[in-house]
Length: 168
Image: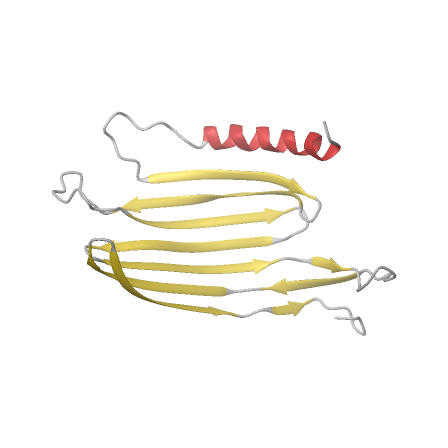
């Protein structure tokens, strides 16, 4: 087995066990309103990282006559690494009859190292990219298989913790 796979297999095993612990089976005929998905991983860029996702489902009454009713949800996802890297995302998929609104707010703080350009570069320079973003999409169902919608996205990317007189 390749050394990379030997390192990855324990991470996958722990992630599968944690994911199984986060899922309590619903009783027959019962709907699940919450979903918890834990996450654990390792990579050379992040070292160990952990976090998870929490989802809350709502809408569509149990006795709803509309068999086409799709439940709405809101979710929160967080990942934090041993190298103090953070990824956070809050989003939703909200439905009201023939209307649908998808939205996301996200933030990424990912301290890293710049090693220069080219093969001969002998540089190691720390920096931290920050990336807040937001997305919004709205849809109106026009008929079977047809929807009309608008979408917008805003984001800002900037670098912090730059070394004075560095290459970045």
